[in-house]
Image (cartoon, rainbow, N blue to C red):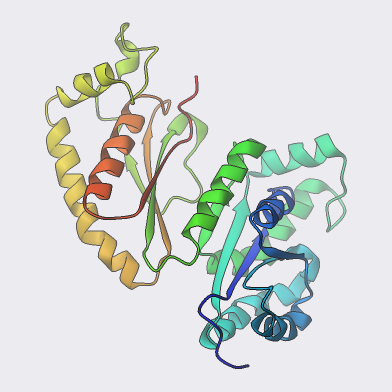
Length: 287
């Protein structure tokens, strides 16, 4: 295989059945990507050669799922080989909780690709897909995402593909709804006083000025934010040096509406001011 044009991008989209892979491929298709679902791994090298030669196939998204069975374990070495040949290659893995997957199959009445009881099939599928998940550049947890939110997440990922800079995503969340599965770094800010217990602030969010003033007036809050930001600023170049394309920093409080939202917004502004490409997302801000 000859050296690839720098504009050629090959993206693998994989994940557990029911996590939204088909919807993700549709989003890429809407953005003008050449999409192929479940291409046999045995044909991958030939397909890559074709993509290199075709002027229409500058951005290609390939769906890979458990139907490839035990051949999936050879995909990570193949990805490395494609990168060595000059292609820009990325992997997005879609994840969801067992409960969400089982519910979605029950609602749609679709048969799981591995057959049998859904719970057993999901466990077996996770084992087969483990090598791909380990090789993923980005893991997207769709457990609590609506279709619109999934499209937004994928759209964000498309915007990051091809960038030579590491993109930082800062996401607020509530621990009562679980830790985001795609988090690389997590910070628990439940040590800060909770505005939920202040009657005038309860209906507001961490994006509102009264909540911002309240939290910044608490002893040690500003010192914590400054120290934390300096630590992250010192670490980000090391993550980028290791070749990470995306870094997700999750900030959590109890409900995900006040403290985590404020700290996430503050941190995103601070990192942007230092020149880092930053995306800000509030998972649990809605009441």
